[in-house]
Amino acid sequence: MKLRATLGYTAAVLTVLAALLTPFLLMGLFSKGVIALGLHVDEVYSGGPKVRSIPMGAYAIDVHRPVSPHLLQSARPFVQLDWTPVSALPPRVSDLVDVDGDGQPDIRVSFDVPGDPKAPLRVDVDSLNPRYEAMRNAGKEKYSRLIVRVDNAILVRVPQGKP
Amino acid sequence: MLMATNAYLAPHAGDPPRSILRSLLLTLPILLWSLLMFANPSARADRLSHIAGAVTALFMTVLFFQMMRTRSTYRWRRIFFVSLGLLFPIGFIHNLLVMRGSMGIPVEEMIAGRTPFCFMPIPFLILPAAFTKTLVFPGSIASANHGIASMIGLWLALTLVMGKGWCSYACFFGGIEEGMAAIPRRAKIRNIDPRWRYLPWAVLLAMVLLSMALFESVYCTWLCPFKAVTEYIAARNLLGLVQNIIFILLFAGLVIVLPLLTKKRTQCAFFCPFGAFQSIFNKISIFEMKIDKDRCHSCLLCQNACPNLSLSKESIARGETLLSCMKCGACVDACPQHAIVWHIKGTEVAVKPERARLLFLYAAWAMAVMFGGSIIAQGLAAILHFVI
Image (cartoon, rainbow over all chains, first blue to last red; front, side, top):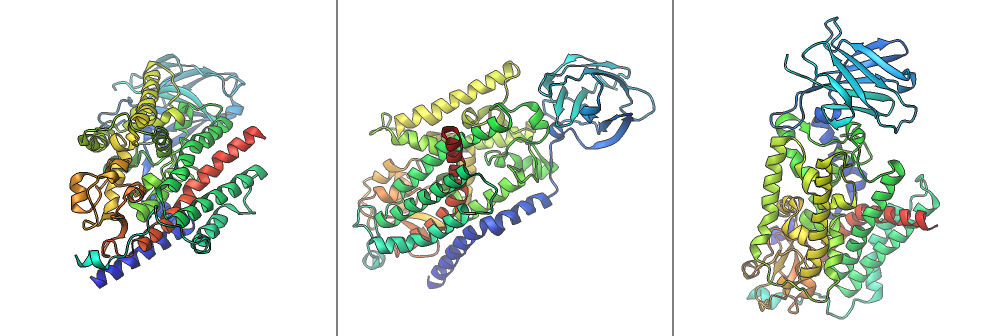
């Protein structure tokens, strides 16, 4: 019983020490441990990793890897394209984009670039490849079907149809 | 029986106060800790933030002094906790309005990974992360400001120290309902079916499974009452509107109306899945509450005082609280027989309970100053910015 009590008090004192070490050591240590797990944010939110960049003169189109939602996830498969930097975009963008990298254009993406960064965006997508769905006057209705401005890029997500 | 004759009477809220000098000496470590946490002249903060920090340091130190002097834990902790609950939304909303101009989180911010991460979704992230290494939350993992890793790191440290004491010393949501529960003199609803206390476990199980199946934090999207006073989903369509109506109704019902009627923390006791999850960690916490069965007269005043329904006749007969005990100290202060005591696992029950209380309070209050105190200071700074 005495040993158990000694262990109990030792653990209690260590707990107080742990509390005092939290802002200086423990919190950072645990955070680094979480980062070391190699987790990543769901691609439905992040848009997936960038796979290539298409130079368009003053600006570029970054093509992301297609995102396939998980089994019961409500989002549909999509591919994200980033027009960047916004400052180099013309007032009206209308670009043919080779999404899958086969040398043939797959979609035509058209949108206006308003001067006000908070102004709502609308996009038209014409499908030249049945793998990608056309969109008319789309805003930001769904994660898989939207146009938004994030920092210095305009992001367009095009839903994927059946091949 | 031996225990009953040897144990000295547990210091209690009703006992004569400690001497001022002794109370000051016991408070000194917390005073130094508060100064360390808030008096950082090198921090790049404006004058009003420094004032808010100084006021918070004084506030936390005075409350701890009162805990030492009066030997009562609950009523002084409650002042801190209600302040935390009220000032968190003020500071948080002020920050949102400064940064974003709105409480609604737009999809752009979610895609950019700038959704502030609170602790609530932690239980719902575990299964998707374990099976697919994916975090189903639109935040940033490594960001220092409200990042997922830093919040999980903080939560792990706090949980290691306090177990479910998190819900009484760290949760920035529980204070609002604790404040509401403190307002009425008597409860209008007294007979609460004890089976309600299983509901948070049911909500936890349902939300964990749904989050795994649908790959999103369903609780945050549909059921979090505190979205009503923090950061709601920008209602872009009918679905968003419905979600926001649900948040407001849950907040009004569980955080305002029911605590006023029952004098209980009803959101915590009957709904909060994070609280249920946190209960598991009471098993690893070295601190717990125990009931000296030789001294207990089964008057059930402790059961009535418990804001979380963490005491039952059966558990009192066993000499312990239920797994959901938040270590708030309400039962200790309510017991006229000094039968409920703070306890360190492995030691004898009711032997030097004040030592156990002090060790727990030093650990818990250090965390409260560091985490809750910084939130209080942020809220005070927001008010000062608004007023001055």
